[in-house]
Length: 282
Image (cartoon, rainbow, N blue to C red; front, top):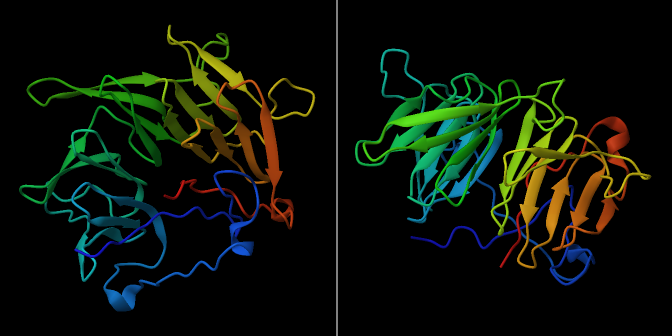
């Protein structure tokens, strides 16, 4: 099978090196190969990408889930007459857990698990029902699911394969609860800490299950560049990258300092340029 992805970071043509903040485009030329519906992709609007442990590339689109082996696509779509088909053809999030299970989040059909042996899908009812944005796995094997309408869920499996869910939502009277039910991004860092990006800020889950909140503001300790958090990533140095519309905030590895990096052309003035995904290359 072809080597499909060597890794890249892209944010409105803004690239950073691991050692510093110099634009990558000034150091080397980055080239891309284009895959479109002419190559067999089901739809050109791709909203989620993951490479599984077998080397397959999975692309979530507005019209189907695509598996690519480097040569051809296999497309999975919702079939209203087949309960083992994927629950919705509009794919919004993809994740492979430590057990090699492929989790598929959809816009209006909730969460699905892919059965590799039968190439069918299992619909996960304990999870959120719609607008799935992200997945993350903790050290105990629990899978966290972010929804921009239903809040935050943690899904666990028993020995028999039964999946149960626990839901976390905002309670106005309790400041230790989730800051906002509109959850956009998730990350479990190297210390096992869960970070939750929401419409109104960044939450950090403590050891007792309480949530601490970080919001925007130059006068706030560790104030963010913006309150709407759309992407999270921890790099190989332990730094936490926090994507939003105006640009990126970066916590150092000790989580005691923060730096901000704005879009060069300030595209956020028009509501464009949100960081959709952050990835460190090899």
